[in-house]
Length: 476
Ligand SMILES: Nc1ncnc2c1ncn2[C@@H]1O[C@H](COP(=O)(O)OP(=O)(O)OP(=O)(O)O)[C@@H](O)[C@H]1O
Ligand SMILES: [Mg+2]
Image (cartoon, rainbow, N blue to C red; front, side, top):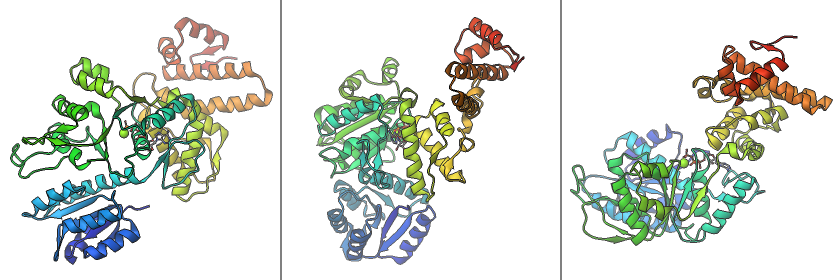
Protein backbone atom coordinates (compact mmCIF):
# COMPACT_ATOMS: atom_id res chain seq x y z
CA UNK A 1 0.00 0.00 0.00
CA UNK A 2 1.87 3.05 -1.21
CA UNK A 3 0.83 6.41 0.18
CA UNK A 4 -0.42 8.87 -2.39
CA UNK A 5 1.10 12.31 -2.78
CA UNK A 6 -0.62 14.85 -4.97
CA UNK A 7 1.70 17.42 -6.55
CA UNK A 8 -0.01 20.61 -7.68
CA UNK A 9 2.01 23.02 -9.78
CA UNK A 10 1.43 24.70 -13.12
CA UNK A 11 5.10 24.30 -13.92
CA UNK A 12 5.60 20.92 -15.55
CA UNK A 13 9.34 20.82 -14.86
CA UNK A 14 8.74 21.16 -11.13
CA UNK A 15 6.04 18.48 -11.19
CA UNK A 16 8.45 16.19 -12.96
CA UNK A 17 11.45 16.70 -10.69
CA UNK A 18 9.43 16.49 -7.47
CA UNK A 19 7.63 13.38 -8.71
CA UNK A 20 10.92 11.68 -9.41
CA UNK A 21 12.31 12.56 -6.02
CA UNK A 22 9.24 11.27 -4.18
CA UNK A 23 8.59 8.16 -6.20
CA UNK A 24 12.10 7.04 -5.22
CA UNK A 25 10.76 7.01 -1.67
CA UNK A 26 8.03 4.60 -2.66
CA UNK A 27 5.11 7.03 -2.81
CA UNK A 28 2.46 6.87 -5.48
CA UNK A 29 2.48 10.21 -7.26
CA UNK A 30 -0.58 12.04 -8.56
CA UNK A 31 -0.34 15.40 -10.21
CA UNK A 32 -2.49 18.37 -11.12
CA UNK A 33 -1.75 21.65 -12.81
CA UNK A 34 -4.68 23.78 -11.67
CA UNK A 35 -7.01 24.31 -8.73
CA UNK A 36 -9.84 22.65 -10.61
CA UNK A 37 -7.77 19.61 -11.47
CA UNK A 38 -6.42 19.41 -7.90
CA UNK A 39 -9.99 19.37 -6.61
CA UNK A 40 -10.99 16.61 -9.01
CA UNK A 41 -8.03 14.43 -8.16
CA UNK A 42 -8.56 15.00 -4.44
CA UNK A 43 -12.21 13.93 -4.58
CA UNK A 44 -11.47 10.95 -6.78
CA UNK A 45 -8.23 9.60 -5.34
CA UNK A 46 -8.15 10.92 -1.76
CA UNK A 47 -4.41 11.54 -1.61
CA UNK A 48 -2.57 11.27 1.71
CA UNK A 49 -0.73 14.56 1.37
CA UNK A 50 -0.76 17.47 -1.07
CA UNK A 51 2.35 19.36 -2.09
CA UNK A 52 1.29 22.53 -3.79
CA UNK A 53 2.83 25.64 -5.27
CA UNK A 54 1.60 28.75 -3.57
CA UNK A 55 0.97 30.58 -6.77
CA UNK A 56 -0.51 28.96 -9.81
CA UNK A 57 -1.26 31.03 -12.82
CA UNK A 58 -3.98 33.38 -11.74
CA UNK A 59 -5.29 31.58 -8.71
CA UNK A 60 -3.78 32.00 -5.28
CA UNK A 61 -2.69 29.08 -3.17
CA UNK A 62 -4.98 30.27 -0.38
CA UNK A 63 -7.99 29.74 -2.60
CA UNK A 64 -6.87 26.27 -3.61
CA UNK A 65 -6.19 25.43 0.02
CA UNK A 66 -9.70 26.48 0.97
CA UNK A 67 -11.25 24.38 -1.79
CA UNK A 68 -9.18 21.30 -0.90
CA UNK A 69 -10.03 21.65 2.77
CA UNK A 70 -13.71 21.76 1.86
CA UNK A 71 -13.34 18.38 0.21
CA UNK A 72 -11.22 16.89 2.97
CA UNK A 73 -10.68 18.91 6.10
CA UNK A 74 -8.03 16.57 7.45
CA UNK A 75 -5.84 16.53 4.36
CA UNK A 76 -2.28 17.76 5.06
CA UNK A 77 -1.30 20.40 2.53
CA UNK A 78 2.32 21.51 2.20
CA UNK A 79 3.01 24.69 0.27
CA UNK A 80 6.02 25.35 -1.90
CA UNK A 81 6.88 29.00 -1.73
CA UNK A 82 9.49 31.20 -3.31
CA UNK A 83 11.23 34.09 -1.66
CA UNK A 84 8.69 36.89 -1.42
CA UNK A 85 5.60 34.71 -0.95
CA UNK A 86 6.39 33.67 2.59
CA UNK A 87 3.72 35.98 4.00
CA UNK A 88 1.05 34.09 2.07
CA UNK A 89 2.48 30.81 3.32
CA UNK A 90 2.20 32.05 6.91
CA UNK A 91 -1.37 33.10 6.26
CA UNK A 92 -2.01 29.61 4.86
CA UNK A 93 -0.64 28.02 8.03
CA UNK A 94 -3.18 29.95 10.05
CA UNK A 95 -5.85 28.52 7.80
CA UNK A 96 -4.78 24.95 8.32
CA UNK A 97 -1.94 24.27 5.88
CA UNK A 98 0.37 21.62 7.30
CA UNK A 99 3.63 23.45 6.58
CA UNK A 100 5.58 25.15 3.85
CA UNK A 101 8.97 24.78 2.17
CA UNK A 102 11.02 27.51 0.60
CA UNK A 103 12.17 26.97 -2.97
CA UNK A 104 14.80 25.88 -3.84
CA UNK A 105 14.46 23.15 -1.22
CA UNK A 106 16.75 20.49 0.10
CA UNK A 107 15.43 17.08 -1.02
CA UNK A 108 16.05 15.65 2.46
CA UNK A 109 14.09 18.46 4.08
CA UNK A 110 11.15 17.93 1.76
CA UNK A 111 11.19 14.17 2.24
CA UNK A 112 11.19 14.54 5.99
CA UNK A 113 8.29 16.95 5.87
CA UNK A 114 6.29 14.66 3.61
CA UNK A 115 6.94 11.81 6.01
CA UNK A 116 5.60 13.87 8.91
CA UNK A 117 2.55 14.89 6.92
CA UNK A 118 1.79 11.31 5.93
CA UNK A 119 2.21 10.21 9.54
CA UNK A 120 -0.26 12.88 10.65
CA UNK A 121 -2.61 11.79 7.89
CA UNK A 122 -2.58 8.13 8.92
CA UNK A 123 -3.09 9.07 12.55
CA UNK A 124 -6.15 11.09 11.59
CA UNK A 125 -7.62 8.70 9.06
CA UNK A 126 -6.87 5.22 10.26
CA UNK A 127 -9.44 4.68 12.95
CA UNK A 128 -8.43 2.80 16.09
CA UNK A 129 -10.91 0.33 17.52
CA UNK A 130 -10.65 -1.30 20.87
CA UNK A 131 -13.73 -3.46 21.04
CA UNK A 132 -12.58 -7.07 21.38
CA UNK A 133 -13.94 -9.22 18.57
CA UNK A 134 -13.74 -6.50 15.91
CA UNK A 135 -12.88 -7.98 12.52
CA UNK A 136 -9.46 -7.22 11.08
CA UNK A 137 -9.53 -4.48 8.54
CA UNK A 138 -6.31 -3.15 7.05
CA UNK A 139 -7.75 0.35 6.90
CA UNK A 140 -8.20 0.41 10.64
CA UNK A 141 -6.12 -0.35 13.70
CA UNK A 142 -7.22 -2.43 16.61
CA UNK A 143 -6.05 -2.53 20.20
CA UNK A 144 -5.79 -6.22 20.91
CA UNK A 145 -5.80 -8.03 24.25
CA UNK A 146 -8.52 -9.21 26.62
CA UNK A 147 -6.40 -9.39 29.76
CA UNK A 148 -7.77 -7.73 32.86
CA UNK A 149 -5.16 -5.00 32.58
CA UNK A 150 -6.21 -4.17 29.03
CA UNK A 151 -9.87 -4.15 29.99
CA UNK A 152 -9.03 -1.47 32.51
CA UNK A 153 -7.34 0.46 29.70
CA UNK A 154 -10.43 0.16 27.46
CA UNK A 155 -12.61 1.36 30.29
CA UNK A 156 -10.40 4.40 30.77
CA UNK A 157 -10.37 5.20 27.03
CA UNK A 158 -14.15 4.91 26.95
CA UNK A 159 -14.58 7.21 29.92
CA UNK A 160 -11.98 9.80 29.02
CA UNK A 161 -12.29 10.07 25.22
CA UNK A 162 -15.60 11.98 25.08
CA UNK A 163 -14.59 14.36 27.88
CA UNK A 164 -12.66 17.30 26.57
CA UNK A 165 -9.81 17.01 29.06
CA UNK A 166 -6.07 16.70 28.70
CA UNK A 167 -4.51 13.39 29.58
CA UNK A 168 -1.24 11.62 30.05
CA UNK A 169 -0.40 8.17 28.70
CA UNK A 170 2.44 6.33 30.38
CA UNK A 171 4.18 3.04 29.72
CA UNK A 172 7.40 1.51 28.53
CA UNK A 173 8.53 1.81 24.95
CA UNK A 174 6.39 -0.18 22.51
CA UNK A 175 3.41 -0.66 24.84
CA UNK A 176 0.97 1.15 22.56
CA UNK A 177 0.92 4.74 23.82
CA UNK A 178 0.53 6.29 20.40
CA UNK A 179 -2.14 3.77 19.46
CA UNK A 180 -4.12 4.63 22.59
CA UNK A 181 -3.70 8.37 21.93
CA UNK A 182 -5.24 7.86 18.50
CA UNK A 183 -8.03 5.72 19.96
CA UNK A 184 -8.90 8.58 22.32
CA UNK A 185 -8.91 11.03 19.41
CA UNK A 186 -11.08 8.81 17.22
CA UNK A 187 -13.61 8.42 20.00
CA UNK A 188 -13.68 12.09 20.93
CA UNK A 189 -15.93 14.93 19.82
CA UNK A 190 -12.93 16.41 18.00
CA UNK A 191 -12.50 13.45 15.65
CA UNK A 192 -13.44 15.53 12.61
CA UNK A 193 -10.80 18.13 13.43
CA UNK A 194 -7.05 17.72 13.02
CA UNK A 195 -4.84 15.49 15.13
CA UNK A 196 -1.23 16.64 15.15
CA UNK A 197 1.48 14.39 16.56
CA UNK A 198 4.63 16.17 17.76
CA UNK A 199 7.56 14.13 18.97
CA UNK A 200 9.30 16.28 21.58
CA UNK A 201 12.36 14.02 21.61
CA UNK A 202 12.89 14.23 17.86
CA UNK A 203 13.10 18.02 17.73
CA UNK A 204 16.23 19.75 19.07
CA UNK A 205 15.55 21.40 22.42
CA UNK A 206 16.17 24.90 21.08
CA UNK A 207 13.67 24.47 18.25
CA UNK A 208 10.84 22.75 20.09
CA UNK A 209 9.49 25.90 21.68
CA UNK A 210 9.27 27.57 18.30
CA UNK A 211 7.74 24.46 16.72
CA UNK A 212 4.99 24.45 19.34
CA UNK A 213 4.34 28.15 19.88
CA UNK A 214 5.79 29.77 16.77
CA UNK A 215 7.95 32.90 16.67
CA UNK A 216 7.94 36.44 15.35
CA UNK A 217 10.32 37.62 12.69
CA UNK A 218 13.68 38.49 14.28
CA UNK A 219 12.82 36.80 17.59
CA UNK A 220 16.24 35.12 17.53
CA UNK A 221 19.12 34.74 15.10
CA UNK A 222 17.82 32.75 12.18
CA UNK A 223 14.18 33.76 12.66
CA UNK A 224 13.99 35.41 9.26
CA UNK A 225 10.22 35.33 9.12
CA UNK A 226 7.27 34.72 11.36
CA UNK A 227 6.43 31.11 12.16
CA UNK A 228 3.06 29.68 13.17
CA UNK A 229 3.38 27.03 15.84
CA UNK A 230 1.58 23.73 16.18
CA UNK A 231 -0.76 24.94 18.90
CA UNK A 232 -2.03 27.75 16.74
CA UNK A 233 -2.29 25.49 13.72
CA UNK A 234 -4.16 22.84 15.66
CA UNK A 235 -6.91 25.19 16.84
CA UNK A 236 -10.04 23.15 17.67
CA UNK A 237 -8.12 19.93 17.16
CA UNK A 238 -6.07 17.52 19.24
CA UNK A 239 -2.33 17.74 19.70
CA UNK A 240 -0.38 14.63 20.64
CA UNK A 241 2.77 15.58 22.51
CA UNK A 242 4.82 12.43 22.43
CA UNK A 243 7.87 11.98 24.69
CA UNK A 244 6.79 14.87 26.90
CA UNK A 245 9.51 13.89 29.39
CA UNK A 246 12.06 15.28 26.92
CA UNK A 247 10.62 18.79 26.89
CA UNK A 248 12.95 21.45 28.33
CA UNK A 249 11.76 23.10 31.58
CA UNK A 250 11.43 26.55 29.96
CA UNK A 251 9.13 25.11 27.28
CA UNK A 252 7.26 23.21 30.00
CA UNK A 253 6.39 26.51 31.69
CA UNK A 254 4.89 27.85 28.50
CA UNK A 255 3.04 24.61 27.90
CA UNK A 256 1.57 24.68 31.41
CA UNK A 257 0.11 28.08 30.64
CA UNK A 258 -1.59 26.67 27.55
CA UNK A 259 -3.08 23.90 29.67
CA UNK A 260 -4.26 26.24 32.40
CA UNK A 261 -5.16 29.48 30.65
CA UNK A 262 -5.41 28.26 27.05
CA UNK A 263 -3.17 31.09 25.98
CA UNK A 264 0.43 31.78 24.95
CA UNK A 265 2.62 34.16 23.01
CA UNK A 266 4.80 33.40 20.04
CA UNK A 267 8.51 33.65 20.83
CA UNK A 268 9.45 37.30 20.61
CA UNK A 269 5.80 38.29 20.38
CA UNK A 270 3.71 40.55 22.57
CA UNK A 271 0.27 39.53 21.42
CA UNK A 272 -1.49 36.93 23.57
CA UNK A 273 -3.09 34.22 21.49
CA UNK A 274 -5.96 32.06 22.69
CA UNK A 275 -6.29 28.49 21.51
CA UNK A 276 -8.78 25.72 21.94
CA UNK A 277 -6.72 22.53 21.73
CA UNK A 278 -7.04 19.20 23.44
CA UNK A 279 -3.71 17.87 24.65
CA UNK A 280 -2.78 14.21 24.85
CA UNK A 281 0.72 13.71 26.21
CA UNK A 282 2.77 10.54 26.45
CA UNK A 283 6.05 9.45 27.91
CA UNK A 284 8.04 6.35 28.74
CA UNK A 285 10.16 8.27 31.24
CA UNK A 286 9.85 8.02 34.97
CA UNK A 287 8.52 11.53 35.56
CA UNK A 288 8.79 11.20 39.35
CA UNK A 289 12.53 10.63 38.91
CA UNK A 290 12.77 13.46 36.40
CA UNK A 291 11.09 15.80 38.90
CA UNK A 292 13.58 14.84 41.59
CA UNK A 293 16.42 15.63 39.21
CA UNK A 294 14.81 18.97 38.42
CA UNK A 295 14.18 18.06 34.78
CA UNK A 296 10.43 18.03 34.96
CA UNK A 297 8.32 20.75 36.59
CA UNK A 298 6.18 19.61 39.48
CA UNK A 299 3.32 21.97 38.68
CA UNK A 300 3.13 20.59 35.14
CA UNK A 301 3.31 17.05 36.43
CA UNK A 302 0.39 17.55 38.80
CA UNK A 303 -1.63 19.29 36.12
CA UNK A 304 -1.04 16.50 33.62
CA UNK A 305 -1.22 13.64 36.06
CA UNK A 306 -4.91 14.10 36.94
CA UNK A 307 -5.90 11.68 34.21
CA UNK A 308 -3.30 9.06 33.42
CA UNK A 309 -3.66 5.91 31.37
CA UNK A 310 -0.99 3.39 32.30
CA UNK A 311 -0.10 0.81 29.70
CA UNK A 312 1.28 -2.41 31.19
CA UNK A 313 4.44 -3.96 29.78
CA UNK A 314 3.80 -7.09 27.77
CA UNK A 315 5.54 -9.35 30.31
CA UNK A 316 2.82 -8.39 32.81
CA UNK A 317 -0.02 -9.45 30.53
CA UNK A 318 1.37 -12.57 28.94
CA UNK A 319 -2.12 -14.00 28.52
CA UNK A 320 -2.54 -11.51 25.66
CA UNK A 321 0.42 -12.87 23.70
CA UNK A 322 -1.37 -15.64 21.75
CA UNK A 323 -4.15 -13.23 20.78
CA UNK A 324 -1.62 -10.60 19.67
CA UNK A 325 0.39 -13.18 17.73
CA UNK A 326 -2.68 -14.31 15.82
CA UNK A 327 -3.75 -10.74 15.16
CA UNK A 328 -0.37 -9.74 13.71
CA UNK A 329 -0.19 -13.01 11.80
CA UNK A 330 -3.53 -12.33 10.11
CA UNK A 331 -2.71 -8.71 9.48
CA UNK A 332 0.67 -9.35 7.89
CA UNK A 333 -0.58 -12.36 5.96
CA UNK A 334 -3.16 -10.09 4.38
CA UNK A 335 -0.65 -7.31 3.80
CA UNK A 336 2.02 -9.54 2.26
CA UNK A 337 -0.45 -11.71 0.47
CA UNK A 338 0.52 -14.93 2.20
CA UNK A 339 -1.68 -17.78 3.12
CA UNK A 340 -0.48 -18.61 6.60
CA UNK A 341 -2.96 -20.51 8.67
CA UNK A 342 -1.44 -20.34 12.11
CA UNK A 343 1.30 -21.31 14.51
CA UNK A 344 2.60 -24.69 15.46
CA UNK A 345 1.61 -24.92 19.16
CA UNK A 346 5.22 -25.25 20.27
CA UNK A 347 6.11 -22.10 18.35
CA UNK A 348 3.31 -20.11 19.91
CA UNK A 349 4.31 -21.27 23.36
CA UNK A 350 7.92 -20.26 22.78
CA UNK A 351 6.70 -16.78 21.91
CA UNK A 352 4.66 -16.67 25.09
CA UNK A 353 7.66 -17.45 27.25
CA UNK A 354 9.98 -14.74 26.04
CA UNK A 355 10.18 -11.57 28.15
CA UNK A 356 9.63 -9.04 25.31
CA UNK A 357 11.70 -6.09 26.54
CA UNK A 358 10.58 -4.15 23.46
CA UNK A 359 6.94 -4.97 24.26
CA UNK A 360 4.28 -5.11 21.56
CA UNK A 361 6.43 -3.35 18.97
CA UNK A 362 9.03 -6.10 19.30
CA UNK A 363 6.37 -8.80 19.09
CA UNK A 364 4.85 -7.14 16.03
CA UNK A 365 8.22 -6.97 14.28
CA UNK A 366 9.02 -10.57 15.15
CA UNK A 367 5.76 -11.80 13.64
CA UNK A 368 6.19 -9.60 10.61
CA UNK A 369 9.63 -11.09 9.97
CA UNK A 370 8.25 -14.60 10.37
CA UNK A 371 5.41 -13.97 7.96
CA UNK A 372 7.86 -12.64 5.39
CA UNK A 373 10.42 -15.42 5.72
CA UNK A 374 8.33 -18.50 6.37
CA UNK A 375 7.92 -20.88 3.49
CA UNK A 376 4.93 -23.01 4.43
CA UNK A 377 1.51 -22.14 5.71
CA UNK A 378 2.21 -22.88 9.35
CA UNK A 379 4.72 -21.00 11.49
CA UNK A 380 7.06 -23.68 12.81
CA UNK A 381 9.29 -23.46 15.86
CA UNK A 382 12.34 -23.13 13.60
CA UNK A 383 10.83 -20.02 11.97
CA UNK A 384 11.02 -18.23 15.28
CA UNK A 385 14.09 -16.06 15.60
CA UNK A 386 14.42 -13.64 18.41
CA UNK A 387 16.09 -10.29 17.77
CA UNK A 388 19.86 -10.31 17.29
CA UNK A 389 20.60 -7.58 19.81
CA UNK A 390 19.39 -9.75 22.66
CA UNK A 391 22.28 -12.11 22.34
CA UNK A 392 25.38 -10.63 23.92
CA UNK A 393 24.46 -8.08 26.52
CA UNK A 394 26.41 -9.20 29.55
CA UNK A 395 26.87 -12.05 31.92
CA UNK A 396 24.09 -14.53 31.76
CA UNK A 397 22.03 -12.75 29.16
CA UNK A 398 23.17 -15.14 26.44
CA UNK A 399 20.61 -17.39 27.98
CA UNK A 400 17.99 -14.89 26.88
CA UNK A 401 19.38 -14.86 23.38
CA UNK A 402 18.99 -18.59 23.45
CA UNK A 403 15.38 -18.36 24.38
CA UNK A 404 14.10 -20.02 21.22
CA UNK A 405 16.43 -22.91 21.89
CA UNK A 406 15.56 -23.15 25.54
CA UNK A 407 11.89 -22.82 24.82
CA UNK A 408 12.15 -25.33 22.05
CA UNK A 409 13.80 -27.86 24.33
CA UNK A 410 11.24 -27.24 27.02
CA UNK A 411 8.25 -27.58 24.77
CA UNK A 412 9.55 -30.62 23.03
CA UNK A 413 9.80 -32.13 26.47
CA UNK A 414 6.35 -30.96 27.43
CA UNK A 415 4.77 -32.27 24.27
CA UNK A 416 6.57 -35.54 24.72
CA UNK A 417 5.59 -35.83 28.37
CA UNK A 418 2.00 -34.76 27.70
CA UNK A 419 1.56 -37.94 25.79
CA UNK A 420 2.38 -39.67 29.01
CA UNK A 421 0.49 -37.17 31.16
CA UNK A 422 3.01 -36.92 33.95
CA UNK A 423 2.98 -33.36 35.31
CA UNK A 424 5.70 -33.69 37.94
CA UNK A 425 8.00 -35.29 35.48
CA UNK A 426 7.52 -32.42 33.01
CA UNK A 427 8.59 -29.85 35.58
CA UNK A 428 11.60 -31.92 36.54
CA UNK A 429 12.64 -32.26 32.93
CA UNK A 430 12.25 -28.55 32.33
CA UNK A 431 14.12 -27.60 35.45
CA UNK A 432 16.93 -30.00 34.68
CA UNK A 433 17.30 -28.61 31.15
CA UNK A 434 17.34 -25.03 32.41
CA UNK A 435 19.97 -25.79 35.03
CA UNK A 436 22.11 -27.53 32.43
CA UNK A 437 21.84 -24.56 30.11
CA UNK A 438 22.63 -22.07 32.87
CA UNK A 439 25.71 -24.07 33.84
CA UNK A 440 26.81 -24.32 30.24
CA UNK A 441 26.39 -20.59 29.79
CA UNK A 442 28.44 -19.79 32.88
CA UNK A 443 31.06 -22.45 32.27
CA UNK A 444 29.99 -24.20 35.41
CA UNK A 445 30.02 -21.15 37.68
CA UNK A 446 27.29 -22.07 40.16
CA UNK A 447 26.99 -18.61 41.66
CA UNK A 448 26.32 -16.97 38.29
CA UNK A 449 24.10 -19.83 37.20
CA UNK A 450 22.03 -19.47 40.36
CA UNK A 451 21.62 -15.76 39.65
CA UNK A 452 20.41 -16.43 36.14
CA UNK A 453 17.99 -19.04 37.38
CA UNK A 454 16.73 -16.84 40.20
CA UNK A 455 17.41 -19.41 42.89
CA UNK A 456 19.93 -19.34 45.70
CA UNK A 457 23.15 -21.20 45.44
CA UNK A 458 22.40 -23.90 47.96
CA UNK A 459 19.10 -24.76 46.26
CA UNK A 460 20.96 -24.99 42.99
CA UNK A 461 23.58 -27.25 44.55
CA UNK A 462 20.87 -29.57 45.90
CA UNK A 463 19.17 -29.73 42.54
CA UNK A 464 22.44 -30.45 40.78
CA UNK A 465 22.80 -33.42 43.10
CA UNK A 466 19.22 -34.56 42.65
CA UNK A 467 19.43 -34.38 38.88
CA UNK A 468 22.95 -35.79 38.88
CA UNK A 469 24.35 -32.97 36.79
CA UNK A 470 28.13 -32.62 36.53
CA UNK A 471 29.38 -29.42 34.85
CA UNK A 472 26.37 -29.17 32.62
CA UNK A 473 26.40 -32.87 31.88
CA UNK A 474 23.93 -35.30 33.34
CA UNK A 475 25.61 -38.37 34.70
CA UNK A 476 23.56 -41.46 34.54
N1 LIG B 1 -2.65 -3.67 22.17
C1 LIG B 1 -2.17 -3.59 20.94
N2 LIG B 1 -2.78 -4.25 19.93
C2 LIG B 1 -2.31 -4.20 18.68
N3 LIG B 1 -1.23 -3.52 18.31
C3 LIG B 1 -0.56 -2.84 19.26
C4 LIG B 1 -1.00 -2.83 20.61
N4 LIG B 1 -0.15 -2.05 21.32
C5 LIG B 1 0.78 -1.61 20.46
N5 LIG B 1 0.55 -2.08 19.21
C6 LIG B 1 1.38 -1.83 18.04
O1 LIG B 1 2.73 -1.85 18.48
C7 LIG B 1 3.50 -0.82 17.89
C8 LIG B 1 4.05 0.09 18.96
O2 LIG B 1 3.00 0.83 19.53
P1 LIG B 1 3.13 2.40 19.82
O3 LIG B 1 3.92 3.08 18.77
O4 LIG B 1 1.77 2.90 20.12
O5 LIG B 1 4.01 2.30 21.16
P2 LIG B 1 4.56 3.46 22.09
O6 LIG B 1 4.16 3.11 23.47
O7 LIG B 1 4.17 4.77 21.55
O8 LIG B 1 6.14 3.23 21.97
P3 LIG B 1 7.35 4.29 22.11
O9 LIG B 1 7.42 4.69 23.56
O10 LIG B 1 8.55 3.47 21.73
O11 LIG B 1 7.05 5.40 21.19
C9 LIG B 1 2.57 -0.11 16.92
O12 LIG B 1 2.75 -0.63 15.63
C10 LIG B 1 1.20 -0.43 17.46
O13 LIG B 1 0.24 -0.42 16.43
MG1 LIG C 1 5.36 6.25 20.68
